[in-house]
Length: 375
Image (tube, rainbow, N blue to C red):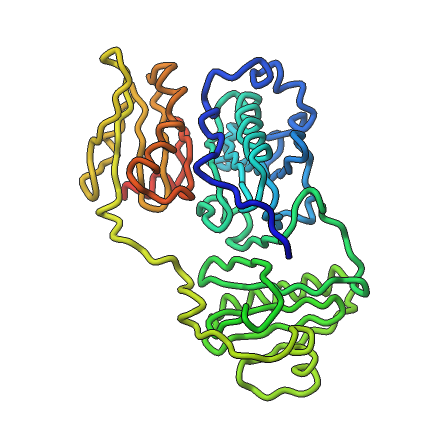
């Protein structure tokens, strides 16, 4: 399948977040955005896709499914205390690997607009395909499906009889990701599960070293596809190395023929190689109290404590797997404006992965994930 130009994460328009935007991103303009008319009013999840600079509601039956050529905005409305009246929000903008610069910029821009509409209270997240934050994955029970294509091709329901075969790669231990890969034996490996979707025939191929969660996800996906297609498809489960009958013959035929299978090691670890978190964790202070903007390290590793967050400033906290821009209640207008820009610049200057999730958290609005880093 032809792919577009891969999006450069470092070019993300995240600097707009929290800045002095033009009138289109002020509260008055936010109220004119039809997409926000019912945003954040009811508990639950709402998703929009960016389509040619417009915010378009994403079908609820497609929640958890994303195209790698698009950008999306995902809003979670919830209560920290179930019996309290106060509502809280998390807003994520998700960037597909092949999204366009315009779509990514619009997603960031519109996230600010939604934030304005909700009174500036949401926790904001920038999400990058294949490196999503834990908070984002939890919205979909730690299982998301990433499909090839995008807004130009659109998502169209296809009848099973006319369905173009696709091969889905299921990988992960606790967090199983589903990604469409090229059809062929070269895409298979012994450590994971693969689902070959031929419309009326669904083949689940289990690598000999695949994990239980991957197999469970494969079974769940097969059931979901069968239900969508009114029970018409037949599901076949194949184990690597076992001799099969006609179902096995059909599987390899649809795959383009048998061939060497990569080892589990060649398929990669289910969990990203973890670095020594104590060497990575850093807490910085962003302050203009001296008359100029200064960015300096406050603590590192285990020395980082919750009480080191300074209410009069912005704190940039690298927790290892995520970077936070914590906005103190007394932070100046300029500090607030530059918070997320400094967080992104930090990734480049300190040679940290550009895909790391970046979140803006307001003092008093911290969530459980943020607090857990200090325990």
